[in-house]
Image (cartoon, rainbow, N blue to C red; front, side):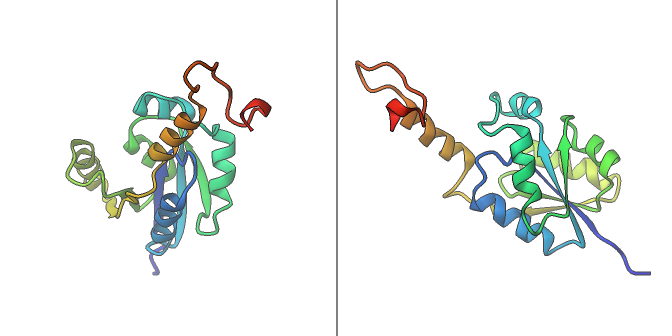
Length: 157
């Protein structure tokens, strides 16, 4: 019998960039069916202390449209093991910024108990949503002596 390997690539996927694309491409090369887990706005805020710039419905549409993604799943719980109970994947993909950290070691222990492999991919250091968000914040910051304006507003153009 041929094993059908289901992969799971969770992320916020906010301000979608080449690092996200690389993770999804590499993940799909190591499984037969790839599910991208898109973290809900509430879970992202809980984990990172702020809501995503791009709303969930739009992030889902972007991720679903990537050719390497077979399905997208909305993550609404903080525990990846609970997500596994819902999705039933064989391998989970994470950026190597998790490797060796407390959260990465917990992930490895939890998934070893249910036979799920944890695979780390190189983190794209030069491009990240955090850096993009800082750049957007800097662009939208008011100049000294001027009131703040929304990025993309007629006054800001």
